[in-house]
Image (cartoon, rainbow, N blue to C red; front, side, top):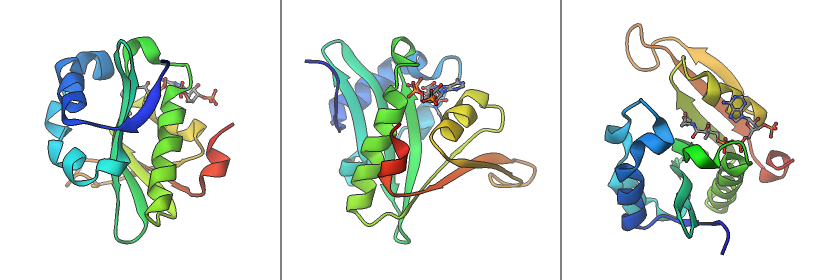
Length: 153
Ligand SMILES: CC(C)(COP(=O)(O)OP(=O)(O)OC[C@H]1O[C@@H](n2cnc3c(N)ncnc32)[C@H](O)[C@@H]1OP(=O)(O)O)[C@@H](O)C(=O)NCCC(=O)NCCS
């Protein structure tokens, strides 16, 4: 069957939450996983489904001003480094463009060097934005223009 990138179902959401550490390691990001996103922005909340479960996922939405905002992206510990994160982003970008998005945006914590390197590899500009998360709480903010074509190698 291979891997299929498809809109997330409620059961997929619960599955990735139950295996949270396989995607996020020691970090507990469960509170950022919102079922409402999957319910309300179904076409931009995608999972990479295979016979042995969910290899990765990307949850986001398109803002009224045409930004495809990625709220969460993760690949399972045994699926990293194979290009899946890039494929998930490409699928998200395609879905976002269909809804009129002209750029992509995401954020991560300043210390998440893996995510910063990953986003840079995908052509994002990465900047540290002071106070993004409140006073004294900087975040790394990623932006890149669409279209999709420049995203795949
Ligand atoms: C970040 C993450 C999604 C990358 O997924 P992945 O499937 O391993 O990424 P890919 O194999 O598609 O890699 C795409 C590119 O990013 C680069 N890359 C990915 N992870 C990297 C890392 N930790 N350090 C340096 N480069 C990295 C790859 O080398 C590749 O570059 P290339 O295409 O120029 O050769 C994955 O490591 C992950 O789930 N991390 C934990 C969750 C997380 O931090 N998510 C991001 C929060 S915003």
